[in-house]
Image 1 (tube, rainbow, N blue to C red):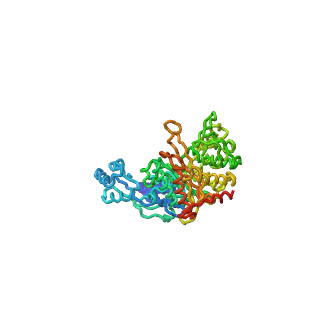
Image 2 (image 1 turned 90 degrees about the vertical axis):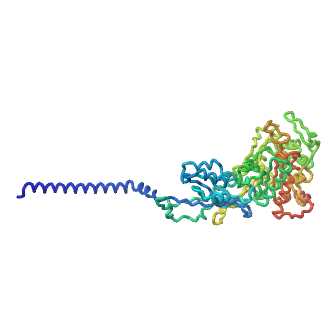
Image 3 (image 1 turned 180 degrees about the vertical axis):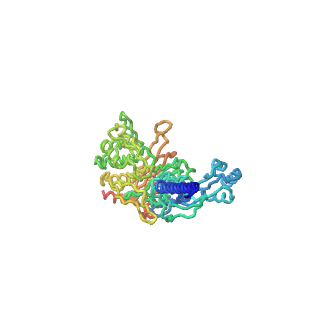
Length: 581
């Protein structure tokens, strides 16, 4: 038999072993449970935290798409330029650095240079700067100053088509014009891919990304003709200077297709330096609404011909230039008695025009006006275009009816008036305007959806032909003689619309918009155009102010289209046109 002490020690040892084994098993159980919990319950979260320490998403950016004219001539593109940034915490002497930058580039604001003294880790000093400015600052090798490449929008033709092309902000955001209207197509695509980094944030390896060329924006091809646009702007500049006017605008389009060949505005706007021309940013050719004045008489006469309520040989009494109706007095510049419809149109008689409108009736005139497109957006998809205002005919009093008949009491923009005139040129058929010719992706494929041209018969073809004859007569015998082109039939109408004086709330005697709208060749129209000069000084009649500029622009457009040569004869085949009717 073993001694009691030995038995005691043996049992104690066994107990200890059992306790140790139990602890080991318990520990293993806890470890197994914890491992299972980490993997099954919190595995995704822990994996995310782990990857967050060494994985980053690298973003690939590409250039914005280009904009071209109808012949593929570049109008807008993107170029890489430097943006200047600072790391203030790394700058030991911010005052010295600030002085050096100011000496090299005084254009950089003092407010931006104040960031050098802050406790930031990073701060932009100047974005998308001129290469000359960047080079001057780089030459100083300043501590804490760095340079990053960013895309900057560049307009190689400077101010050409400036308001219509639009603006891009310093942050690369589309602000106005075509740039904004078609931003979804022009804007480059971005692509993000995971990348490995080390403890210092340096890129070790990135997963395979796409070809950056496939990410660039789509290219736009406009209906604009750069050469015609240039001629239009130059002609406007001369007219504005000659007549000491506030500004001017012009529209050139093709009646048969609705394609807009030029949208010109003066003062000019250079999108490369938009802050230098703050007052010139408005695209008056499509955004300014006002009372059109006598050019609107085209609509009244067109409605009369369509309703067949006037005949070429009849005479209408024009009250010797003053007609007191009790509720209003209508006055004419030319004090005439009996006039034919053609003479009423040539002399631009308000009295004769209203008497013709009375035969047409309020509802018929209103409906024709709406069919021509007034009171509606023209539809070129620019945010700047306006729709004007046409009051319902049921609300017209006699005074409003009279005013509307000769171009007052109605709000319209110049594009609407140009399109309405193009409708006359197109045999009474209205064609939707067109500014975009094609959208090409990086593979050169045209992705612009094909849509059927909107065609609306506004007036009969016979009414359109009769209206055309009246407009031809206007340029040969009436107030539009200075728009005539030797050897070419020109159809048009002058206008001199009074503007409201903001100081008095009444029409200002010397506040006018002088205009001319028409098309050529009138026997086979290829070009329709409108020219408006805002607040000319001295002589303000549209025939004297706007018609000469219109003639210059349309002649250039016809030459460009190969329809006339530089050597023009003086034959106007009016009888040939009359035989067609």
